[in-house]
View 1 (cartoon, rainbow, N blue to C red):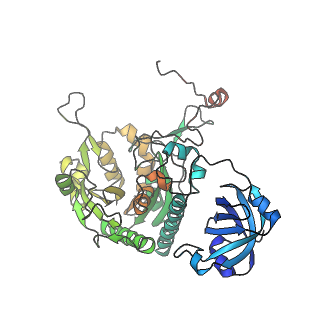
View 2 (cartoon, rainbow, N blue to C red):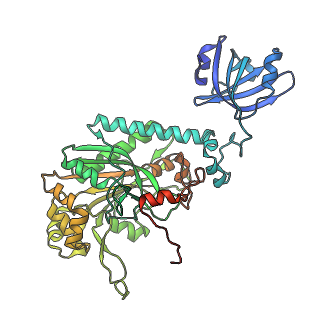
View 3 (cartoon, rainbow, N blue to C red):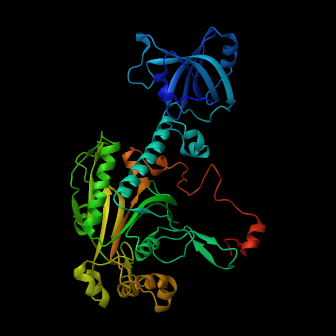
Length: 472
């Protein structure tokens, strides 16, 4: 098929061309039939008249049928041109139609945005929803931004490296999703909550500048800006300071907005900074929305949150059942501020230790966070001891990290963006499901694939897994 993409049709005026795509709208007016056809590049109006054999086929066409259409590109009369519309000044005089695939009546109308349609209905047949102009724009902008970020990082000497999805379960944050290992009965892989340990191991491996668009999985309660699996723009660098990392990422975020969202205004450049203590005291949270006008969807108020306490108590010490053990506020692999390293190593005055950590927030959402890492095994061991890990557990869960850090690992640090969350804000969407091709519901279900779902007894037997009733 010598196919022409719809967005190029204006270059073929008075020529015969063939396009392929979907019937968007069909209007049968007896001796004349009008259509809007669309492909991934745009839309064009086609008209059939004076050709009875073609008109008979045309009258059978319905929305969402897939067709190949041949016709002559004509310029519309002046009074019929649509200013500002793609192909608003041309139409296609159809001379032949080939039906490539028929379609059942769509479960919902996709000629509008679909935003007001029940999300359960949309997610059950997501491939229909993805055809709408809004969702097409969301997916394509996501891809363009991802490619732009890749290019920018490549130009600054970063290497893109994929890290494993089957890894080890270690106590470092949310609950893991686990995968049984058939060839090692009774043992399990964990799906990565982030590439945190691997990217530090890459620094020990001499990569120096790493990034990836990483898939991350966390078994945690869901909300509008969370999914059980999500994408991070993940990066790590050797021989850097907090300032180096923050400046690089600030410039990258500004360039994304400038390149793809010129209609939006960044409230303040350089991005303002606020300490964790100030944010909590003034706003009651560590991701304050500092927009001057919260009704303006095109106003972007980036904010760095800095000077986090390294540790916090897990519970109120007045509760006799929970004596308030220490936990990390961010990441157990972080480093303290230089002036607090001695307290960290000696486990002294723990509550006053400040971490070399930083978050980047946007319009009241945390869109990224990172830290300078503990590259000395003595320091990491001390952190794990403060967190209450026994010597045996430290060796079992983190022995590989301690060994790598002791092999001659350079000082390093990094950051990870919540890419879905960033795109949600830039696209003016109310939740991240609108910028993910195949998201889960708030309950963590894939309505289209009907997952999670039971597996048969043969698979369970192969894995050595026995299910028990909840009441047991």
